[in-house]
Image (cartoon, rainbow over all chains, first blue to last red; front, side):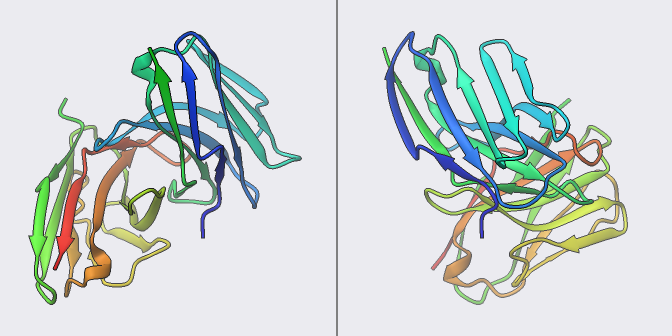
Length: 111
Length: 112
């Protein structure tokens, strides 16, 4: 079973708009990470937020974490066509750096 | 740095055949792991290792073996391939626990 569930499963927006993706999880975590996957390629790490952090920024990315609600959100501001990809949240817990991935959000940014 | 290198990129097997997926990293990472990704889904952890000589099972370990004789290499062995093992396999590494993963480009495996 998947620990994280992304919402929405698919999102289509125009270039310049903001994109928000949500992730919910079920058990306590050490950290939550967001990854991006272009079609047919490996995953690329975007941002990591630890369980004692509430918000983190990286360029056009903003991630929030609410451990009381067991949820996180990824905001991409001023989206570009090149942001078209699938985005996955992954929760880390326990030893071994085991990550549990959600099913992903497929983002399409139309030029 | 090449990062995480996986070979082969594509493989077709017949049911019952065995094979080894290779994974190597040149970043001196202690932690390595194998995931599989089925169409339209997220990744599921097969096996992981926290250092040379140490391996453990993930969420979906049945039908797969791993070993970690060196820090650099973490091969995944399919013992007797089944159609249910048709998937894309990703190897990943990280410096330590609770750190970001670096992924290889994947191996697309089809079992007929």
